[in-house]
Image (cartoon, rainbow, N blue to C red; front, side, top):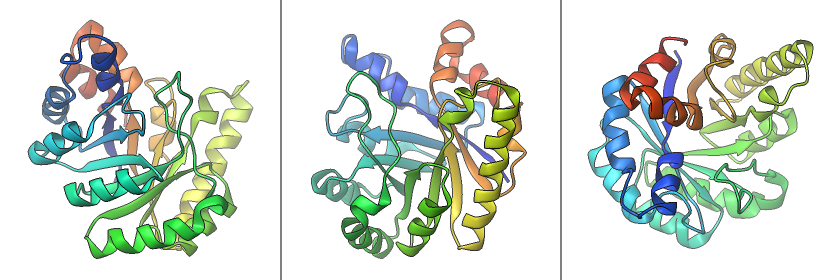
Length: 236
């Protein structure tokens, strides 16, 4: 069964470029859960452009659903997050300095580090995940590293030049979710998912969390946060 997961990074980013206090990502979490969100996602970046370690601690204290924290593959961040103990930790590559979106990890570059981190997370009862491109070799590599989950970066859907290309991408992702499931991993998905394409993604088997951020925040500016979440969930 699919779960709607809210990425609260746009809220934290707006706060940080304004007065540093508002809007509050912790307040957004409460409203999102009232609206029906079943998982909350945030990104503890090395440059702290989005949430801070203090935010993550507060989120972890008050959350009633499931907290998935993304992090770059850096020793300090990972050690700090292990002490906080969110439900899940997702490894990502740094995004562009002008953007808050995380980038997919090339697992061939980090296999040694990730093997140790995945084992440590498991010993601390924290689920491990990694953001990857929808590619069969990346899926196999993630399974070899014994990740609990993979998170597919579906940004290519929004960039598809035509309907046929979009359908091909959806079919490819569908096949990869089956492969990941057979290899013993859960599947989450993110990347430019919005009101226009979430229905198609929700039809794919074995996807657990459908992660959406910016479209919710944009709509919430007009109609309110709780209703924006409800409207997105009604499309799943």
